[in-house]
Length: 438
Image (tube, rainbow, N blue to C red; front, side, top):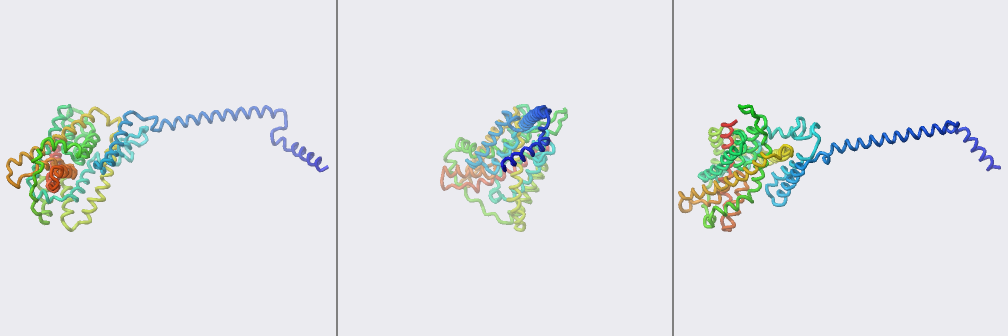
């Protein structure tokens, strides 16, 4: 009986809830059919929209926008990072630049304020310091605060070696003119011969920034990226390029020449030097004031004995921050569609030639000086290679080559004199070029 009552109750309940389930009339079949059709249509529309969304997303990815140029530049960025880590070639420069090259060549859709050349993008704001030449003087401030000019003060004739190495600047300038670059562009390219990255960026930001217009209406090209990358690349390759030239031009006997120790320099001389040097060099080349002014100001902070905190900030935290920003933004400026051009390739070729000429100029002039020096006043011609302003790498390379010829021959302090004078010389050369072509 209980089972019968249970079945009856269930059937009664089904009768009452049937309308709620849409099963009450003969039209329910049609309703079900139409509902299924609408659901299928909705599902199809949803799938279409989903595919459109996925396609839209894909069009914004790097996979859809990548070019062969992007891949080439990304590979170059990886090589820079590899050289900095594996071989210790200027890692403080090559690693930020390499990372910047990769950042600048990640493909993107223009117009979203992403690229370094797009107004309003974060990278564009950071790049402002390169375009306007803000970062190089700050780098020079840090260099001045960490540089000891004692070897130059103690043996001032070695300044001539730094001057002689600047032949690379003017040789490159003439080469750039021969290849068809106009005067401002050739002037900016020429400074690569000084092997000084900040100076190269400073001068190119003034002469070859893509903004200046010549008298005939021609717009000067924006060559900041290629010039900066070339200058820093050859600075990093000092240990590769210079030793073969040293062994080629300097005999084994000359490589063994031991130089007498430089005279002791008093603290008073160290304090007076940056003031006197600032006045003399900027009177010769006022256009180089942003660079030379900050260089000698930084050195004065170091040598005054009263501003150690400021000097420490300039040579550590400040120069580190600026180096990071400079390296990344210069690297990012190598956007493939702008960087991979015939002009860039010619600039790299000129840079290699200019660096060789600058090194040879220093080495040969050192041999020439020895014609007029007697006895222990003779100089080891190897230190002429330090006349290029790749501080302190070229001085270090000179020292290592000297040790290979004679393990007891220490040339580092002697090589620092032409090395720091090369920094000053390249800045003066940049100022002279700027005063004529700016």
